[in-house]
Image (tube, rainbow over all chains, first blue to last red; front, side, top):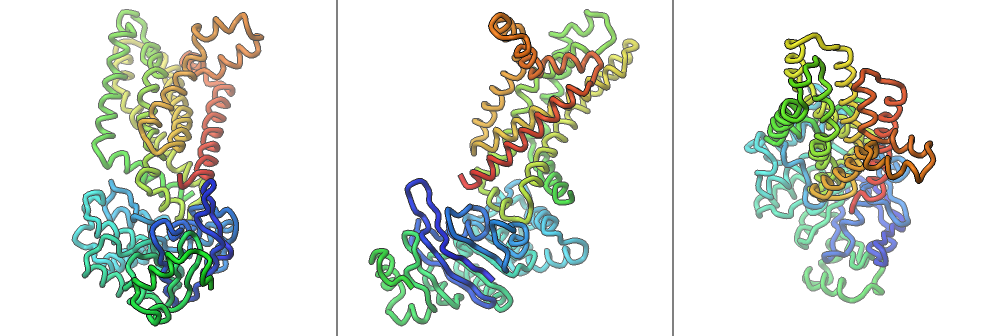
Length: 241
Length: 244
């Protein structure tokens, strides 16, 4: 449902993403790992159509992001890095706006909003301005916005960043619950998270894929953070899979 | 169309979500009401018309319009919501138009709220209300043209102050293009056709024609193409540098 082919992105002389290719099928949860500046967010921004790739293609549910952006974006739920939202709106107004944009109306709209509010536990802050909310609540507003239209494809850039351990657990459970019907890509710094929710892990550094396999394969190589350090610091020439 | 309206509604609510809108409208009305009396000789002229009122519009808009337009895109960039907006299933045209129309509607609301001066002049005498209606339309068109320019300039930066200053400077050039300060030095140096072109680009000349009661095709074409051209440039800039 997600297909990325030879995606490259240059920022001036810097190659941020270097020939990344992968596919994600329905039911898969792909964990995107890598050090800061590895190109995780840049890849996600290209997949979601926010950034135009220097070369290569990305498609969502068969719709090329560059040539059929609206069709692709309809199937997509996206939580951008930092979970941006309109600070002067309340979560209720914000979700109402997103629902209108997504073409939800009437009973379906009310039902979907009520459901995601419950799923990410926004009840208590529904009528407070978003800019006054804590980091954890803001992240959850962003998550609610992404899953509101029950999309086929979900791209989540650091969905658990800023959440406390209980909230992290809840979000992971939520992702697991949704996983069977969707293709999900999430980026994270937390290695345990990959083991907990992902069916597959990709490690990138300096814009290149250095590991692509199951979390179990990764774990078999030794303690996760040692393996991660070894892969991401051993240079870009090794282990291109 | 529906999507544009959804975007328009959100943007317009955004203006009123904070006290900024009310403060803005308050000062707008104070300035719009006091200037004709204290500087425009509204009473002293002993003429029942709103010329002294509308004469200040191009100058007042130099401060008021950038204040409305500066946030349109600069804020989206700064807060990162531009990434959210651009990954929703909306087209660039719908987004640019929705936001622009919200700003224009806000300016329109402020303009309509100046109606007490119209009531005043009707109480004092028998003005030509046709001319006044034309002048209001002209002022609204001027606000729209200037807002479109401001929207484009706001898309160039993530800093609202820079957006304000850029819009002010460009507006100043457009207003001054019709004054003797610009036209006289040019008069000897360039052909008269160029001089006419410069003059026709001027907010002041356009407003002068309209406030005399004439909304002609040229004025409509001028503001129409100014709005169209600016919004097109706005969309192109956004498309080229969404993420910067």
